[in-house]
Amino acid sequence: VIGINPFFDELSGSKHDKETDTFVKDNIRRARWFIQSIHQRNRTLLKVVRSIVEFQRQFFARGPKYLAPLTLKDIAAEVGVHETTISRIAGKKYVQTDWGIFELRYFFTNSISGSGSKGSRFSKEGVKQLIKELIQAESSAMSDQDISDLLIKKGIKLARRTVAKYRQE
Image (cartoon, rainbow, N blue to C red; front, top):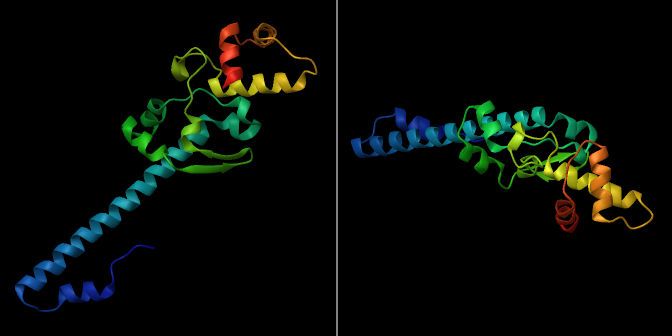
């Protein structure tokens, strides 16, 4: 818990020379501002994480291949802050899930059509996970075209060269 040492609160209320009194009051004011800033940062982080969990409900319930397309802009609009704030908050922060530990940035993924959450309902990371599962499930080697054809049957239109790229990644 962050707080101000009671000694300094008492010091500000007692009679001292004007210079000491000004110094103590000024630094207590700065400390309170700093503490308030940290509390605000924590509240914003909590709002961001709650919004991510809400947007990515299927991921948390069913796993990585159900990761939905989500942009910084989507969360910024939900939380009521600028996209750059979301970007700073998401950096170097991690969340532990049933599927492993992920950086918050992991949950921001474009749709396979590259048009954000308003485009395809399939995220790039989700499709990569699906390709990985298809490859692992097959006993014989599958060509990129075979994978593309299987994805089309599942309603995911993806070119052979894109499958090759995702497979390499």
